[in-house]
Length: 227
Length: 138
Length: 185
Image (cartoon, chains in turn green, red, blue):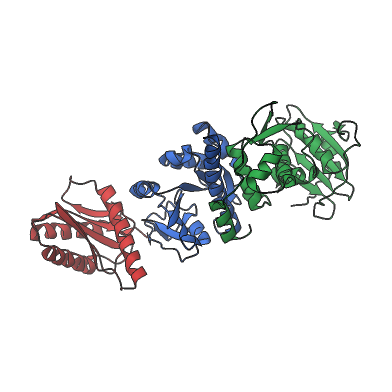
């Protein structure tokens, strides 16, 4: 991931008008201060263009996101994203109708940020923007080779591409913990790659073969080692 | 550097060699000289088989046969025969050049004679064809 | 002996031979000939029949990797090999002019595999040419093949981890589809 000479202050003087996104809460709970805060600010932006986001972290890093170009870059900080971040501020700049100038020469791909934030934002829950009791289905594959991923995530993504699952059903179908299934669903959701469908009362649960034979995927994965 | 199959002089030599083959073997139905990757230098007689496809297939068959001889460690490839009910195809490399001769004989010709004529053709080509060097494009 | 045949397709120079070399456990069987078309693609040699590599999974199980020649004049080899293939990996180079049109053209030659969702696309040389993006390819492929969802990944055919992900993804999509069909029946 790159750092850049263009500071958030430079960006602020370019665009001037911004709104501060307050930290989200979950039904009367305490406001999100970690990656969840950034995730909740970004998720509604799908479909927008000409939006720029600046998020400040407690460790001095600022993350600048050119949402329309699907780029981002970091300014300041230690160079590595913490697993548990404290997001102190999120500002959204809108410049409707104006094309933002190219701000840095070699930005990083926004997908890598959304993947990372999505995996870490809600470790013990499905992301707050999802309604309760939903099943999920993939609408597009992420560019997995450009993301740090595991073979289990490959398998789960493939399952979501072929069927429709709750987090629990996905975990059982893939032979992983529900936590691993959930964090993947959160990441794909933040990247805008999932469709959710409410589970209707009385609808059949997705049957998962109780005795899962080790399929070709499992045998091949064992042979090829970690990726 | 001009590819050999586009060199005027090489084409003339190829045409002449195939014409001589036809004189020696009335059983020759069709013959073609192609580059290693399947481009045609010459073919005879004119207006018969679709040389483009046959040339590519010749290249594939040659490469596969050489893969077999390498795999089995039996030395370099000599010739390839595809024997069918109504004719047989013979393929040989032109020594010293990235070219292959492919010739279709009808079944009135013995394999031995077909091979002998084909060998004579490629040996003559090996001597007559120019080495690499720039010449005129057709 | 259980064998799973995976086909590597795509234009000349996209990295099919390299990709198979990267994945194969055996020394790859190749059928390279001198390239007469260096003005089109600047490579010394080109595949004229097939590339063959393999991965042995167990005593009686192999994944066979076949690479076809990229040029259309060898499409008889495509016909021969796609009969045996369970899935396909299409490699395209992103710095070619009209790369998406090239990808769609190759997918069209292997329609059956694409329509049954048995394909993954690898886009090479995105370090040289960042656009089009994998999403751009995915949009075009979805438009041409409604109802499919073909994974599109950035790849370096020399990178073992990336090529492993491509292969595992293809296998995972094949298995996920068949297990869903089992559940439904």
